[in-house]
Amino acid sequence: MSESVTRNTERTVEADGMLIDYHVPIEMDDGVVLRADVFRPQREGRYPVVLSYGPYAKGLSFQQGYAPQWNKMVADFPDAALGSTNKYQNWEVVDPEKWVPFGYVCVRIDSRGTGWSPGTLDVWSVREAQDIYQAIEWAATRPWSTGKIGMTGISYYAINEWQVAGLQPPHLTALVPWEGAADFYRDMSYHGGIYCVFQANWYPQQVENVQHGLGERALKNPNTGESVAGPVTLSDRELTQNRRDLEADIKAHPLDDAWHQARSADWSKVQTPFLSTANWGGQGLHPRGNFEAFTEAATEQKWLEAHGDSHWSLFYTDYGVALQRRFFDHFLKGDGSWAGEPRVRLQVRRVDGFVERHEDEWPLARTQWTKFYLDASGRLQTDVPAASEASYPALGEGLDFSMTVERETEITGPMAAKLFISSSTADADLFLVVRVFNPAGEETVFQGALDPNTPIAQGWLRASHSKLDPVRSKPYRPFHSHDQVSPLEPGQTYEVDVEIWPSSIVVPAGWRVTLSVRGKDYEYQGPMSDFARSFHYASKGCGPFLHPISSHRPEELFGGDVTVHCGGDTASYLLLPVIPEQS
Image (cartoon, rainbow, N blue to C red):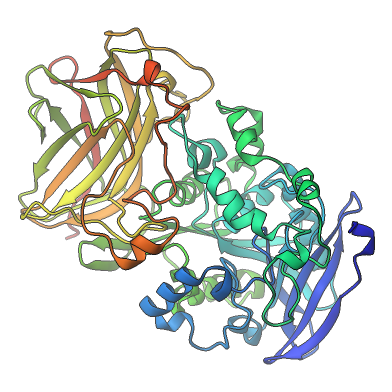
C-alpha cells in the first residue's frame, strides 16, 4: 500500500484531565509531514511546551514495549507509577499526566521514518536535527503555546537535544538531557577506536520494529487501538529502502570523520541553558556526554547532576520529575524556583547506597589527583617501583593490579591511565576496568544504566589510535584524535594514555581497588539475578556495549601477546581523583 492512501486521522479527545490531539501534522521544509501527539490542559490558554522527538513510537506504551524495564522500575521505585493512570507512559519521555496539570503542554513527535511519521529513517542525522529545529519553531507559534520550548528525555532524546541546540532555534529555551551521549564516535560507535556492536543490535530491536510502514504488523496503541507504526503497511523491501543501514554506515567510517562529527555535539554553539544529568553506571554510553557538556558547552547557564541505578528509572521518580519541573518552572515560566541551585548535584555512590552532596564545579577543585603505579607483581602503589614487566595473551583476561585502602577513600571524577606497552603484533586493544573487592575477595558491582552487574569504571583504547589531540587533552581526560591509524612495531615499547570514563565510589577501609588491563570485554564472575538472566541487554557487566573478537579484531593483528612495562623509565600508572574529607 502506498503512502498516498494514508488517511487523515488527526483528532482531539478529552481524557484523564487533558485534551489530547492525536497525529497532529507538522510539515517540514522538504514537504514531509511528521506526526505528533499533543497533551495539553483543558483550560484554554498559552502554556510552555515540553517537546520530544524520537524513534520509539509515540503510541507504544512503556509497559507493552519495555515490560522488563517497567516491572523492575515500579518494583524498585513505586513512586514512579504513583500519581498517574500510567496510560500514557512512553519509553524515555515524560508522562504527560505529571506535567499537564502543572501548566505544561507535552508534544511527542515521531521522528522521520518511525511511528506515524513517513520519510527515510536516518537516526541522529543532520536531517533529524533540522526537523527538530522546525518542530520547535512550529510549537512556538501554536495558539496553546507561550513560545517557550523546553526539551527533556533519556538517551536518544538527550542526544538530539545537544544536536539541535547547536543549530540555535530561536524558541528553544531550556534543556534537560538525561543520560545522553554527545560524541557519536567516542561515546557510541568506537570506544577508544574499537568498534562497538551496540547500535547494530539496538537498531533492529528498538527502532526497526516501529518503523513507519509496519502498519498492521506492529503493536497497537492501547489507548486508541491503532498501529504504533502508522496506518499503512509496506512490504519488507519498501521498509528496507526507507531506512539507512546503520551498521554499514558506522563500519564505513572507522575514523572520526565528518560523518561522525555531524552527529556529535558542537559545544561551541550550545548556548541554551541546561541541566545535564549523568549516570555513574552508564559505562559504555550514558555518562561521558553529560560530563563533557558541563565542562565544554559555551553557555554559562549550565548545571550538572549525577546519579546511579538504571537509566530508565530516576527520570520517572518523584526525585527526577521534581528536579526537571523545578528547572523548567524557572526557565520556561520564570518563577525563580531554580535560584540558588548548586551548580553540581552529586549522588555520591557508596557500596550500600548513595549520599547527595552539592558542589560548585566539575571536576571537583579539591581533587587530589593521585598516581598509583603498576608493579609487575600485581600491585598498585604510590611509589615508582623498580623496572619490571608482565605479559598476557592479547585477546585474553589480562592482568590485575590491586591495592588495599587503609582508610575510607572517595574516588569521584574522571580517571586515566598512562601505560607503557609493547605488542608482538602490529596492534593491540586495551580494555581497562576499575573494580572494587570486599575483604572476603568478592567483587562489588552495581545496577548500571543497562546492566545489573556494572563495575566502577571502564576505558578503552586501540593502541594504533594512541595519537592525542594536544589542545583538548587533559591529564585526567586524554582526548584521542582518531584521525589516523599508526601500526605498532612489534616488540617496541609505546607510551599510551587511556581515558577512563568518570565515576564515583566511596571505598571502605580494608577493601581492595583493582585495575584490570584486559584484551577483551569485562566479564562479571559472580551470581546473576533473575533480571540479569532475562533482560535482553544484560550481560556480565557491559550490557550491550560489547566489542567481540571477530573480523573487527583479526587474530593476526590483535592476537599476539601484550607486555605492560612497569617502573623505572616506563612507570605505568592509574590516575585516580581522590576526594579528601571536607572539614
